[in-house]
Length: 261
Ligand SMILES: [Fe+2]
Image (cartoon, rainbow, N blue to C red; front, side, top):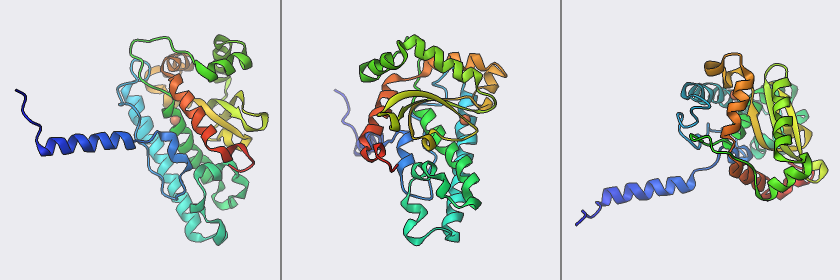
């Protein structure tokens, strides 16, 4: 007969179950209203994106680069709050970093580049981590459901979309990101766009549902200067059910489809 679980092990199991339920996707943090954001944990282990992205790259990308953007963004927001260069009724802690990035022109010039670069770095990475998942067997993955239909309507078929997106990723000069987004100003139409440095697509009224990071720090350890290899490997990791969840999440934030982010 199996031993009865001890009170301690039962309690531990309950805590782990509760923690799993409470675990948020990285993108969920970007709408919090605070001046102290946390580095989200990844929805997978550091080794689990192999063989497409190696453990060393994921570790330094998350614990080095993403953590640095988080800390510097918090420092800029806290300085802004402390120096009280905003109206009391328009406190920085009453806006999420997403809302702040959407209206960067409202940020006092003194803090604007710090918020653009580090706030953008925080948000962009939260989105990047959210739309990948392990795929050790290199299974074919394609979008289905409404997103799959919208993709056919917008791009003809999935292969065309993939080709166009890849072309943008390979032609972007310098460091940046390529995005698939819903365009608020075109009734949620799917659009492919690119941003440089840590600029975000929110400034253009786009709600991103898929993103690839093409800064060299995302692939240099494994692929050195071979960006095409990084892009072709990354396609294996795109998790279309996570992309669809993110798409639904944006739609759930109804106010986003009006003028105010
Ligand atoms: Fe990055």
